[in-house]
Length: 211
Image 1: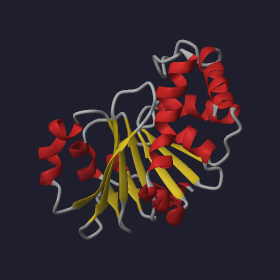
Image 2: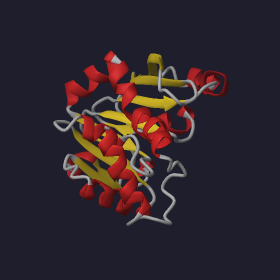
Image 3: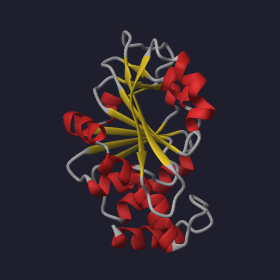
């Protein structure tokens, strides 16, 4: 992944210079805080690994500058990845990065989460986005869902009450500390849907139609 890191930074510093996809541009810091921070949750969690192997499909929501979707896709070339991002400029930029890095197992979609339907069994990931309480309630699925959040320190103190309110719909199935050198304390927090699959009249994009 060290060569991958260097090539990733080259694209950010040349073709995408000025777009500000990340403020972490020091090679060593970028490697730890963006690349390792994206793949270590998978490497350290048996549940994450099992879930990905069972479905062969990962949907990363709010991928921003390409994290964790591109490092994970590099690590797992036989897994299909779909990215959902509400900002068109970021979608176009990460498409360029994926193309330049030769990553072919990724499809990137411009959509908002609340307009997206998970109508196929998959693993859903969120990294460096809002609170768990903001996102779990607006996930529309028809075949059940398993959702993994990458979280920083003190997330339980900040989000514990919101998680408790969601327990009738979502079951907490993992809360695992992840070690990433050079970063703050990290956690992988996973939920499994418990209730009847839910849909919405606002659906504009279906996962099955974008594979």
